[in-house]
Length: 208
Ligand code: TYD
Image 1 (cartoon, rainbow, N blue to C red):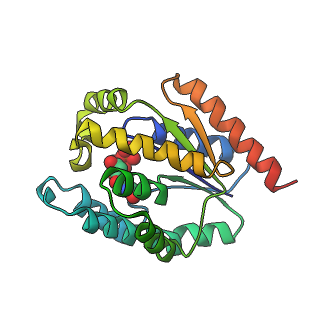
Image 2: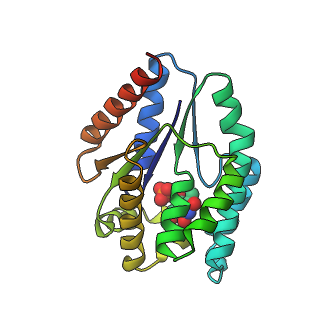
Image 3: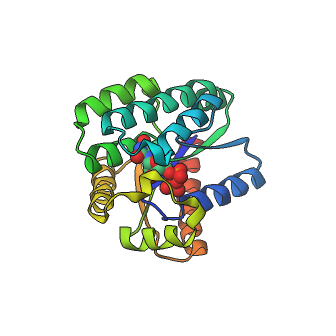
């Protein structure tokens, strides 16, 4: 079972991923929690290039290809082997982030993004994608409070983050069987209750 969490900055995905991992481990699953970009040695190095404040002149195309490079390594080295041995994979962001940020946010063409993504992932898609939806004003306010986590990619205009949010919502509307949208302005506990219920529903449909 492969579950991904998506959302704009400060939506609380990372906390929910950790809570979900803990919950699934307690239920006896072999759980791998990973994140994009990163999750492998090469992915970690790519992450540093992507987030380095000095790289402010990086083009959206270069950005997308670097995210895809990190993704290709993660899928082959980590995600696929874990799924093959029957484990559960929870991933903090996956290719939908590229469609939302580099596609809707930066205006790169969706056909090209999808084609490169197919190569990077070998066509591997999540069984379930949870969108933690939050107005970008609120997300950025939360992020600024945690100042050490502020990175090059957070510095975009609010209009950029609004396009990304609308992009996620559109992706979710286009593929309702894979996506579930959760209101991320609720408390952490409320959000987690929804996350848990949706994952349990998926498990009962997969393993019935
Ligand atoms: P990160 O520090 O991992 O934090 P969070 O996921 O909590 O926001 O930041 C990841 C950043 O990279 C975020 O700004 C979204 C961006 N991103 C893309 O633009 N495209 C992608 O394909 C991925 C995976 C992430």
